[in-house]
Amino acid sequence: MIFDSHIQGIPCQIEITHYTPAERKIVTCTTIDPPDPGELEWQVLDRKGYPAAWLDAKMTRDDRWRIDGECERELEQDRIEADIDMAESRMMGV
Image (cartoon, rainbow, N blue to C red):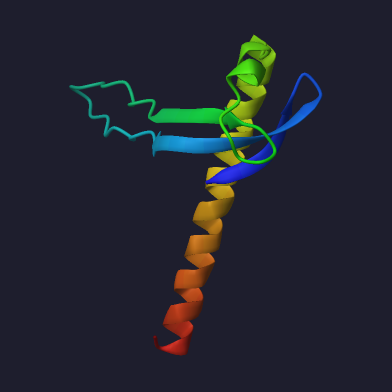
Protein backbone atom coordinates (compact mmCIF):
# COMPACT_ATOMS: atom_id res chain seq x y z
CA MET A 1 0.00 0.00 0.00
CA ILE A 2 1.38 3.41 -1.01
CA PHE A 3 -0.02 6.83 -0.08
CA ASP A 4 1.01 10.48 -0.31
CA SER A 5 2.60 12.28 2.62
CA HIS A 6 5.33 14.82 3.34
CA ILE A 7 8.51 15.14 5.39
CA GLN A 8 9.63 18.58 6.51
CA GLY A 9 7.23 20.07 3.95
CA ILE A 10 8.68 17.99 1.09
CA PRO A 11 6.06 15.89 -0.74
CA CYS A 12 6.73 12.15 -0.78
CA GLN A 13 5.04 8.78 -0.74
CA ILE A 14 4.99 6.19 2.02
CA GLU A 15 4.95 2.48 1.25
CA ILE A 16 3.73 0.15 3.97
CA THR A 17 6.07 -2.83 3.60
CA HIS A 18 4.95 -4.96 6.54
CA TYR A 19 1.95 -4.93 8.86
CA THR A 20 0.82 -7.35 11.54
CA PRO A 21 -2.18 -6.09 13.52
CA ALA A 22 -2.09 -5.91 17.28
CA GLU A 23 -3.28 -9.12 18.88
CA ARG A 24 -5.88 -8.81 21.58
CA LYS A 25 -5.27 -11.11 24.53
CA ILE A 26 -7.94 -12.77 26.62
CA VAL A 27 -7.65 -11.75 30.23
CA THR A 28 -8.89 -14.11 32.91
CA CYS A 29 -8.86 -13.74 36.65
CA THR A 30 -5.65 -15.80 36.86
CA THR A 31 -3.72 -14.51 33.84
CA ILE A 32 -2.99 -11.06 32.57
CA ASP A 33 -0.97 -11.09 29.38
CA PRO A 34 -0.13 -7.74 27.81
CA PRO A 35 -1.48 -7.34 24.28
CA ASP A 36 0.89 -7.88 21.38
CA PRO A 37 1.46 -4.38 19.95
CA GLY A 38 1.63 -5.56 16.34
CA GLU A 39 4.21 -4.55 13.77
CA LEU A 40 4.31 -1.73 11.24
CA GLU A 41 7.14 -1.11 8.80
CA TRP A 42 7.22 1.45 6.02
CA GLN A 43 9.65 3.19 3.72
CA VAL A 44 9.90 6.67 2.27
CA LEU A 45 9.61 7.02 -1.50
CA ASP A 46 10.04 10.07 -3.70
CA ARG A 47 7.06 11.27 -5.76
CA LYS A 48 8.06 8.95 -8.62
CA GLY A 49 7.98 5.91 -6.30
CA TYR A 50 11.72 5.38 -5.83
CA PRO A 51 13.25 4.82 -2.35
CA ALA A 52 14.38 8.18 -0.94
CA ALA A 53 17.06 7.62 1.71
CA TRP A 54 18.02 11.30 1.54
CA LEU A 55 14.49 12.28 2.57
CA ASP A 56 14.34 9.58 5.23
CA ALA A 57 17.48 11.17 6.76
CA LYS A 58 15.64 14.52 7.13
CA MET A 59 12.81 12.93 9.12
CA THR A 60 12.23 14.05 12.70
CA ARG A 61 10.68 12.01 15.50
CA ASP A 62 7.45 13.99 15.03
CA ASP A 63 7.44 13.09 11.32
CA ARG A 64 7.81 9.42 12.22
CA TRP A 65 4.94 9.55 14.71
CA ARG A 66 2.71 11.42 12.25
CA ILE A 67 3.48 8.95 9.46
CA ASP A 68 2.83 6.01 11.80
CA GLY A 69 -0.61 7.54 12.42
CA GLU A 70 -1.18 8.08 8.70
CA CYS A 71 -0.31 4.41 8.09
CA GLU A 72 -2.79 3.29 10.74
CA ARG A 73 -5.53 5.46 9.19
CA GLU A 74 -4.77 4.12 5.69
CA LEU A 75 -4.86 0.53 6.95
CA GLU A 76 -8.14 1.16 8.80
CA GLN A 77 -9.69 2.70 5.68
CA ASP A 78 -8.54 -0.33 3.68
CA ARG A 79 -10.19 -2.67 6.23
CA ILE A 80 -13.43 -0.67 6.08
CA GLU A 81 -13.47 -0.80 2.28
CA ALA A 82 -12.83 -4.56 2.35
CA ASP A 83 -15.72 -5.03 4.81
CA ILE A 84 -18.03 -2.98 2.56
CA ASP A 85 -16.99 -5.00 -0.49
CA MET A 86 -17.65 -8.25 1.37
CA ALA A 87 -21.07 -7.05 2.55
CA GLU A 88 -22.01 -5.96 -0.98
CA SER A 89 -20.93 -9.34 -2.36
CA ARG A 90 -23.10 -11.14 0.19
CA MET A 91 -26.08 -8.96 -0.67
CA MET A 92 -25.66 -9.73 -4.36
CA GLY A 93 -25.34 -13.45 -3.64
CA VAL A 94 -21.83 -13.69 -5.04
